Length: 259
Image (cartoon, rainbow, N blue to C red; front, side):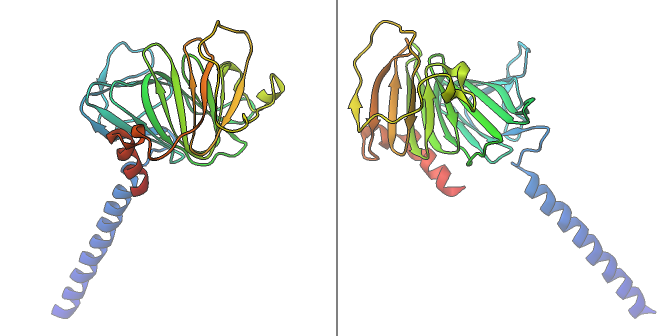
């Protein structure tokens, strides 16, 4: 009887341990991984990071593991930074004094596309985005330009006067001064996307033009666009450049390597 009783007790303990272990494992696996309803999570927040949901006028603290959804606005303050992880394993990081609007987040269109659109009001973001297929549309816009993302690592900086700089570290990004036309068939609307032969300087600031342009920015290339939507420069950059040695860039490279 004692042996049987001991055996039953052991079975009960083992069973509880298995169930408990499964629960712990499942909980750990779910931490930091957005579900379809949340669509995104704040996976890192250092300093003052705020979020405003939809049409709400209230700014709240963007806590780690708090949800990010369509319609949200996020802001980092001085000496603050944040990281967002989206459901397709896309990562967006925000430097200090950056404000972004999540216009759409994996929303299904009438044409069955999964569409995401993020608008950078001001500041600096680092994006590490998974490769996209033809069923996914991922755009990032600024006041003067828009970028269609197919899966890449890049950095985009928007200054107070809306001057925009895009640097691509891996992959390629299609950039245009007509962001409202960033559609899958946009090349039919204006000049076919093309590369400018070799690194070159584009003429400096000029009067606003109605001309629409598209550039393909590839590995270790950058483009600078002034606040009138004109291209200031386009060409290569190097990992040894002083701007690439900043703590912000090095921190992002370490985060990417660790993931």
